Length: 367
Image 1 (cartoon, one colour):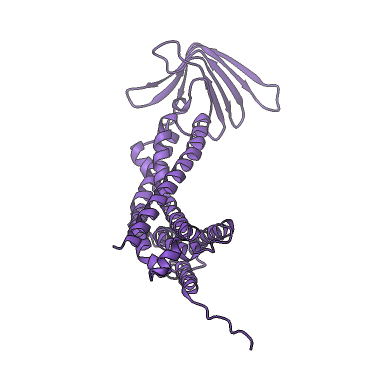
Image 2: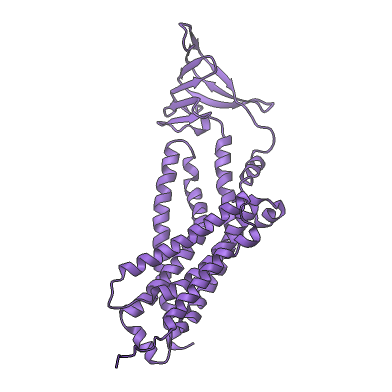
């Protein structure tokens, strides 16, 4: 490989690494804030935040890699024009078309990695995310309660608040619970709470000494009960909870393996297959499209060119999403939607590159 091509590959790889690491850090920051907020609200457990963050990052890697490659090629071409290095390469007999080979040397491995992620790794990560959330939903209401925090369950029908336990045999200390039933609204307070499992497998929530207040809305009826020990039978699900969680996780088309989507043969499954195939193709097309988009006039400002390039890339991804929605609704056949957008963008890249390569004839001066 010539010195020119080696320098181009090295610069694109360096820029791609910087952009990729920056995007991942930004993604993780936003994701962790959202997950920690869900954990504080009791939607997920605090013990699964890091796992969910890792799996969610895997699902975002295909898009992050494609965008990183696009920005890296764009900034590399633009920098060579801005610093007049392209003048040297043009004087050496090279043209803008000679960028295709070094760019593809970087883009093809990245596209192959994106294909592996979208076809294999991302569905597995989506299954893990859904399984984590489903297991948390299958926990008992008491296990979702964190000492010192309010927690909801049953779609807001029950609200719990508990303090730290004072005895080793208890899971929670003082407990406050509010429950909205079809006829009665109940409030319970207890000195402690724990889970007990009977020999036959039945599970009970056992509250320590406390009080229960029942009020029927719209009427003056009220009931007051003092108890030394109050047991509530917890609803248990039959079968293996882990297997049930996995089965529930695979109901989403995002989490289903690619071969299973093909076997399903539905519009929804084909739209998901289209999305998985489109991302590696988009990574290649964006890398090729960045070559003519990055060829700018050094005398002009750079903000306008970068804005146009960003809008073209955003339009490309939106068209892919639009095609996926049309395939899912049956408005567009999969055999057409899987390639039409990529063919248009590739034709646009070829047209822009040919226009950059074309040498205009000098104007004829009037006699």
